[in-house]
Amino acid sequence: MDDTTLLRYSRQIMLPELDIAGQEKLLDAKVLVLGMGGLGCPVALYLSATGIGELILADDDEVEISNLQRQIAHFQNSVGMNKAKSVGDTLTKLNPNQRTTLIEYRMNSSDLEQRLPSIDLVIDCTDNLESRYLVNEICWMHDKPLISGAAIRWEGHVSMFDGSVRDSPCYQCLYPEGDNFNETNLNCSENGVVSPLVGIIGTTQAMEAIKVITGIGETLLGKVAYYDAKRTEWKKFSLPKATNCPICST
Image (cartoon, rainbow, N blue to C red; front, side):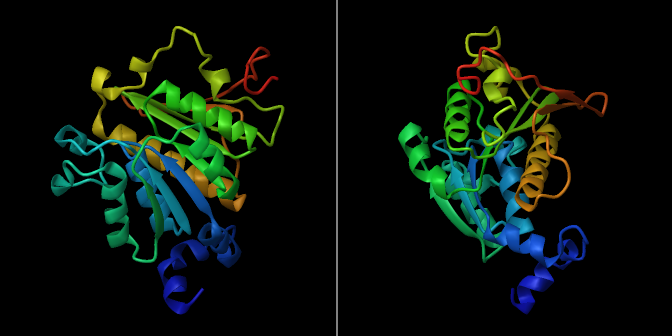
C-alpha cells in the first residue's frame, strides 16, 4: 500500500484486529454482488469505501423513479440507466481506485459457474426466489460463502451460508422450495418497504462480508438475524440443516 492508500483506510487499519494485514485481505478480495436495488446499493457503497479490491456488480434492471426512495446509489439523472452501470458510476466518484466489473444482464447457471472459481464471496441482494435458489445451489457446489439478505415492509433478515462447512445449512433450508413462502413476500413492489430498512439490512450484509474476508469476529453461519424496525429489535436464531434439503443434504 502506498501512502495515499494507507491514509484512505487509516481509520480501519488502526483497529488492532484488522491492522494492515486485514486491510490487505480486503484489497485483495473479489466480491460478486447480485442485485443493485435497495440492498445492493448500500452493500456496494460500503464495500467500495472499505477497500474491497474488485466488485462485480450484476443487475439486468433499469433505474425507475420509484427506486430513488430507497436505492441510494442511484440519482435522478440515473432514471432509465441500467442499475449496475448506475452504481458503477457512483463508485467511481466515491473511490476512484475501485475496480468494478459490470454485468448488465441476469446471470444464469452457466454465467455463475464460469465466474465463481475466481470469486471470494457472493452477496445476494436479489428479490426473486428463482435467482436466490440458483445462486445458493451454485455457491454450495463451489464451496463459496454466500451472504443473503431480504427486507420488506418493516422487517428484514440477514444470513450467511458456506458450502465448505458441510454440516451447516443452506438458503433452501431457510426457505424450502414449494413451501407456502412465495416470491411476492420478497418483492417490495407488491408489499412496500420503509426506506431506511434496506440500508440497515444492506449495511449488515456488508459488515458480514468484511468479517468473512478478514476472519474477524463471529459470522452468521448457521444463523438468521431478524430485524424489526417498528421495535428497533434484533433477534438471532439458529437455522437447522434440513434433513431432506436437495442442495446441502445430498
